[in-house]
Length: 372
Image (cartoon, rainbow, N blue to C red; front, side):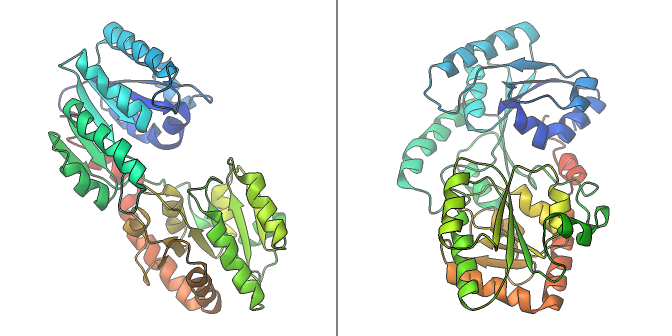
């Protein structure tokens, strides 16, 4: 991946981002002989594989508010880290870390900056405020960026207009097929543990419970089906600030028997095994790995027709794309898949074939040349 061995610093706002997405990338760089360390706000235990490889983690007090004075302290911390360790490359992820990490270039002109975009906040259909704030920031920060890595076609085309030295598109952060496999768990046993019947039609939604993930569209679709006498079950994996509010909506609509909020889960593969299809109703995505995980388990997906989701889901082939907040259309697509097992199986097989190009080792290999 790197011609000459390098010292590389990964910078993210939170350590959980590294644990969730970047471990295979860092492992490959180290196995090729490079030195890799990480700087972030340490909000959870560090992955043991990385500590065993000698990766050093520097605690940097980032906050999610870009204008919070705490981020100045974080930036001063990054300056000290760079002075002390003289990295050749910083690879930045997530908006706040990406902003302050690239600003190191103002003090260290020879430092190479690589920026992975997990989804620009300015996108087709984004609020005007997003364009007014985030687009000018990226135009300015392009002057301090050597390489941009994007994950979907819309972001790739937009990044090219920023005119940094190099712009790449890769297939996200990848999905580990060995961890997401229908053969690892028993569908029947998992359903029993979830109090689901063998003949239930089960939908899984893997998403943080927040405004962006738009659980309300799913809830309204399930109500439409229930009013037609069609009984489906939805299991929702994920925590979030709207968890209690969404639960109140479910109870108010008398859908407690149909929709279960499971909270944070560490058994996503097992939950997917128990499900028939997946669903994601987001307003905004970069390239959602939860959909990759579903496709790796041969599940068709119903998703909103937005950047990131439509990069993965081919409408009518591996699932369906529906308009944002169109609960009627969503209900219709659920009903269609419910009634046609053969269609589900065909779409699931198609999904698996499509997602093969997103396997984590292929994604990591595709980064060859980025650090040159």
